[in-house]
Length: 276
Image (cartoon, rainbow, N blue to C red; front, side, top):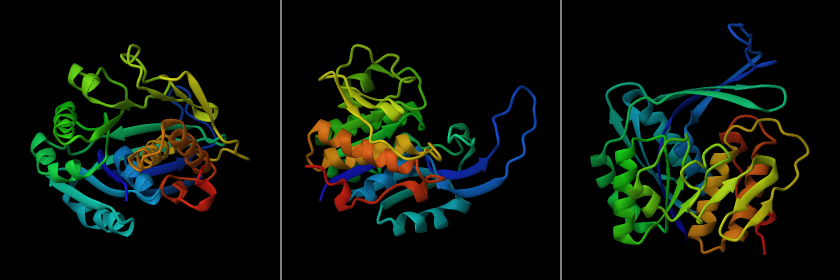
């Protein structure tokens, strides 16, 4: 079985369905509210696990969330280390309009420390792929990349949210997965898969655009990028070549936007998605 290790953010996501986004100081009333656990790392770990990878996950949480969040991860079959810190877990407010477009505000909450990553070294060493994002402190990612290099684990770095990356990560990551807004600083790096929403994704090394699968209707785009990254990591950890892995990730992300919210929309691997 392929193994994927994820280090990232975990917290609560509150989804508000609105008739339109705010203009200026306008107050807009939501007509629906849904709350679930989430965060980029959390979502990506769920996506990798549902796609068949043996998945481990490291995150910092507040004491109130450790038990119930751990139970959700247990239900997904994910090995987890939720490091309890003093303070509140991350929190995200996601507004979704009738076209399925979103606006997201995140409170990062309690933070991982370098020592937490070092205590997770055995999971990094056992994985084929380590998946990282910018939602954790830079020093944590730097140390994770160093440990991955020591054990021959390939690093997929999803540079979201966008921020300048240190040379150690630019040199040490095996693959970057930015969207169109997150490519700054990666212009000279050929090992990039750029996600392009409804167009699909672009493999820079080959100049190949892998098209997205058409969907009947876009309901909610929240979590589509996380689904893409988790499935891509699972496919590559299992030995898939890049274009096939991207096609599978596109298919999974496309399916995810046809359902509301994130956890209910992340697909499970079925025969439908086994691409030849």
